[in-house]
Length: 501
Image 1: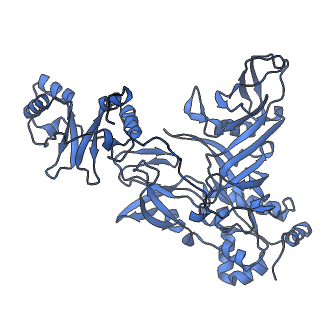
Image 2: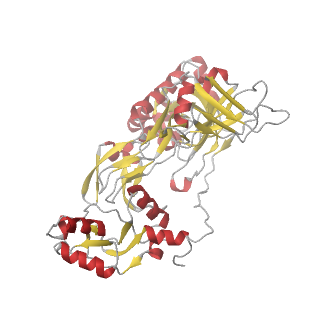
Image 3: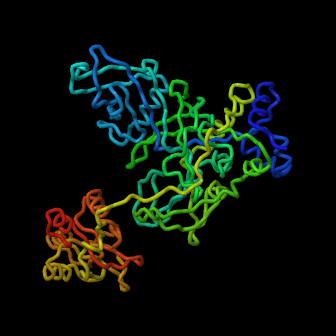
């Protein structure tokens, strides 16, 4: 016979409830089996603490005197969305400061409000008969707000892909910096403590489930955006009262050259209603698998380099293509354990009651790529193919002659088998000639070359040219053989209508 949520709640009220964390449950299921564990345990608590970019808060500021209808507003110079009503706004975690850029954003504002700090509110409006004021600037703290409601569209992914980078350039991503040439692997999530990993079929988790959210009691209000149960990547939409939260479990953060985010502490109690649920909550890190994706390819579909378990990821090193690669987590297992322990303590003290979902989470696949009506222009459509190359042992004088004869500004340097080794420009050669240097091309070439793939969108090429302040990119294939070049001049022709069709 199974248990019901109400029977477990009665045990919480009379103090007889048996609560364990998900990590503790793994050992219990291994020892007693799922049937024995279901009889022994009433509730399993879970926890995760990581960067959850799709987070934010609705704030109500109250009316000024005279009133103002907000059309634009900023909190500590971070713009919030004012298109809700006269004095309601939504601030997103990833919105960056207009003065401080990527180092400070909405996530930091939310943390400062939760911690009790005052923030600067700046408002502009057009002025109407009933809202005549056009500008307001003031200081306020969270107690000055009528409502401060955290509403996060997508939190607590069921499974996160691990990321690495096979390119020869450091990639700055929402998972942190990915070092070149398989320099590291970054992963997220708490493994066996992860909420949705302990209830993968959403048997007890759904709309209306009461949860631990940033040190307060919150609720699941539906599936998260990009909820994808088909690929074990379910997600949650959640809400909670910002005024009741603790800055211990909500932290603003910035990823270098990527932007800002919000670290969210989230835990879900799993009522052990039967042995099937007990079996699910007994999952271990060795049983939770994810894929390692290559973010060196800047397209939506990333190459899969292998499958790993969380036990392997947490070991600090995994093997990819025969190479030992260091791993690092952007989530905090330490704080995730505090989330699970705090939720356990609340239940044991009778301060947290379980709820039955009023509606289950969808188990249907529901993620599609963006519909793009315009054709995607790729590097291969714009590049100049069949360009001249040069070997590293050729003389500088000969290189100068080839550049003059070919009337081009960039000359890739290749090995005997055609692989890219470097690049020289008219500037490199002119400087060498002016200084009367007599040597070989390898002495003046740039060895660390920024490159593109022929199937990269031209937007990626344009960004690389701007980011590295260069005027050309060799186009290479999978074997690093030069197949063309794309220049800033090529892109300028596109913008002025003189490019390829």
